[in-house]
Length: 600
Picture 1 (tube, helix red, strand yellow):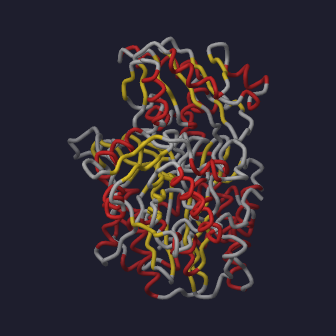
Picture 2 (tube, rainbow, N blue to C red; picture 1 turned 180 degrees about the vertical axis):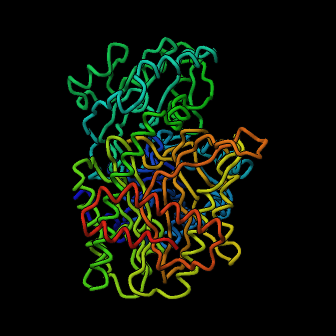
């Protein structure tokens, strides 16, 4: 099993650790300390060594932060984690704070009269610190860069990860690393910049056509890189991660140096040097300034090219999704047979699903720990089942399963919510609204230049009509055998990045009723040029190709609520599922699929 079920949350340890942290801060005359979820690479998924927020508070969500003050410790969480946080932290010592509704600066001023707050500049970007400093102006509260106080009091902190790096073949990447480097170096020269510092692990892996094993579920390696304007790259990563074959793959234009060599190298660079203010640790800007090196803020040069998949990557992703779709259908057929008989638990379901993916003989890893929530656990948006929380799957309830796989030809992410027995009219009504939102995104055509925020309301409109909504984005970017959550593309209220052909995103509206059930439906989609329409006079439009082919639960659909266009889309989709997936199935799953995709 890739997934384990041990509980990594230790809320009982939080109070003692909080006391030790406050004592260390007081000794250095600091009034507080910022504890982010992110690591030095601004990763959503972090290595065990970097799980400082979870170690201190017990909260294991993939986003959030803690601000520790003398009398209060606020755990800032967004709408995805409002339920989860209450079960993971000691509420007598840690206070959940709804974020971004409550701004950190306002909260600090409400709980602290004056003093210095420490932060580790390796774990925060210039954007973060400058915004917080601006909100604290004239308050008597200041920020100061310090060493990391969590590391200082964490006696058994794990060692840094040393997972092996390995080559990602050009045949799957669709472009050689040398060609990528030449293309991006030309952009630096046009901007008058001598180099760019690259800090995101997936950017480095994309640029060099390598993958790694430093972060659970995401095939990336930890390191930093400098792309020079003559196409050379200096890679700062633990040399032990690279065997002879991988070093040969990197080639003579890529120089490998240990991480400790990064700061001295930055201080010696000729300027100007590009640094991404939204993703690079502030410590790097401090190093450039210390060396008198001219720094210019600018986007990570890899992020947008990486997000816009080339035809080879898209073709490979299609195949990965068909393979994964067949595994999912085998799983759903098994689940539909077993669940009504009773005796299954959430862990049983997770184990079975992983076994079906393993049976493909192509599974590199799962793309994240499977979310399998039965009944009320489905309302915990990023629920991770453990031995302690494992719940039997009862009769007449919903089961939400959000999962994905890492194959060398693509990364998948799919959510299906299914009925076990009769979950009731309320669940069917909500399921239908969520499905209508997914269909709306799947069908949309839109002018080139629109961003995710412009189409996000389409997924929510059916829910809004019923006075309902969901507290997460409608879609996130997905990498090509890289991070399952990839920027900068998103479908959300706050995304201003224009959608471009080749971007892969999730389409995943939901609805969650705390203490009762959760519903989420998710396909992956890729942006493509929209075909011309006979009567259309706006030619430069985009739409989405659906990559995921797995049926939706017909038992939960209020067919009478669907508009004719929605029903037509669903019937076409299920027809495609049959034609693409049925030939890949064993007999029992084949029979199940034919029934599951019958026209509505």
